[in-house]
Length: 56
Picture: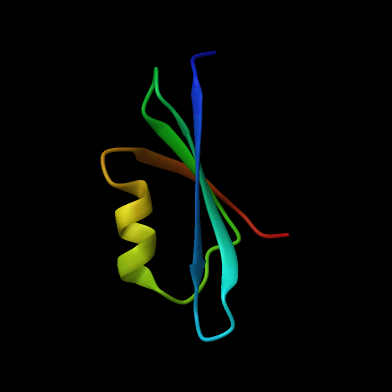
């Protein structure tokens, strides 16, 4: 497993925390608790290959 990069943003009108965990070796990513801001989500995942979405 390569280095992991964690990206966090607050999205939506109530500032919901959304995370992207990205493997820098494979470029694969996991989106965690996505909010209702598709532009921000797309920016967080730019250059990676999303493989899963986790809802907590």
